[in-house]
Length: 588
View 1: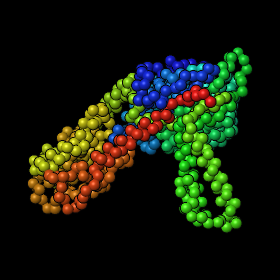
View 2 (view 1 turned 120 degrees about the horizontal axis):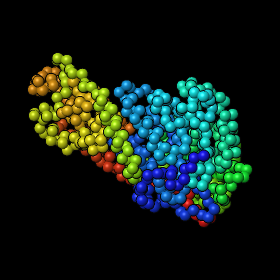
View 3 (view 1 turned 90 degrees about the horizontal axis):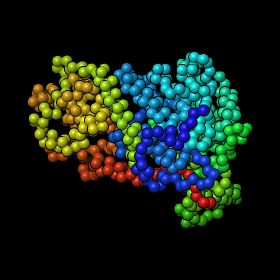
View 4 (view 1 turned 180 degrees about the vertical axis):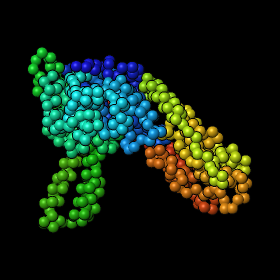
């Protein structure tokens, strides 16, 4: 039995209390007498995303921020552990030969660092096998895959002591993956029931099942096997804000790519059972909602009430306001009267529930309970310094691997335009060059250098000019083409330079359609992009200020859109800070 105590679970994390970026709302209240607490963090479909692209207004993710959030929980007195429900190491889809070295490095890093944070179990998802068996680490849990050849890749369900709570952890996998690791598939439900019974006999108070399978299959396992927590690990998308009760189990799902990590706090009341006695019955857990759960439920109720109010206005011929009262009245026909009355009762019940949820949250007076939340890993969460240093070392390893296989772009054949660089352009277009220097395009390369990403295949293409194009640039071969220069928008300029601007037809594009911008300004990398406002940031006297093809007129700029988005992100971070909090021991 492995011991994951308060000191060992988050070894090496040194952030002081209150310095994690979570604010006072994230602090635990003191544990009540007789309480034992488990804070179980869960992830799924991380897909090799160590950290997010930093170009959006509110990038979510980053394993160093996960470390901070877990450290806060540990300092508050919980036993803290981490599980991953599959899809940890690699992105979906094919990986090119050039991308594989860096993808392997990220997958290996995530496997090692998740274990450093206190990983007690990892599921086996389809994408975990993308890099081959050599990079399938750590060992996975899959009760329904058997055979001696699986020993290097799978481990048996185990019992972990997390703080003062005994936790059993096991997993399942898609049966189609069995042959890839030299095993054979057995009946999933039977295998899970068998292993849960063994874990209970060994003293497991809480059993966690990792389920990188379809949601319908996960629900069946939750209903039929006796697990306490089932973590979905396939098609999790934005995650599930509220846990779903299925049988005795709580079915939960995080958001993918470490954007919102799941946290389920389990509070057991009473002393731990003696080890020399027969295992007690599994604890009966109730969903206590919590501050975040109450907020999510209030939002659900608001949507339901609005639908009912609109319906009542339609059914009765009146216009229902926010209070539900009609401004005009009519009498429903007899056949509809019972239906309308039922809807009004439903409305009253929802309004009463919302009023209860608006009161300060309190823990149940008696019994064991759980509180589930999705914790956004925002920029407001301070990065753990120890993990961040390891991430910097990873960046250097990735850069070295990428540069070792770097090749120059193909040269342009005679008569075909190639890229000449900004210095050639400004000899004639000095005014445009002066405007460009004041834009964020001019700082694009510097942002990569500052973050150590100048040799990262995920980043370079949108921060240089002519990337991957004939006569352009490539990773490691960017000289004179760093940052987003003139030719990114107007096309390669060698023929234009040779013709001194007198060539016919013109060898460059004078007007730039939105499709050119959308190559890099995607939702994933530029969430506030809007064509005309962004053009207002880069056009002006000396650079397209009087282009007849572009009729901008007055209006917002891209800078204003981004500033507003950053302000919203700051407010969202403040509003979501209670999601970091574990259940408080409030007096009922």
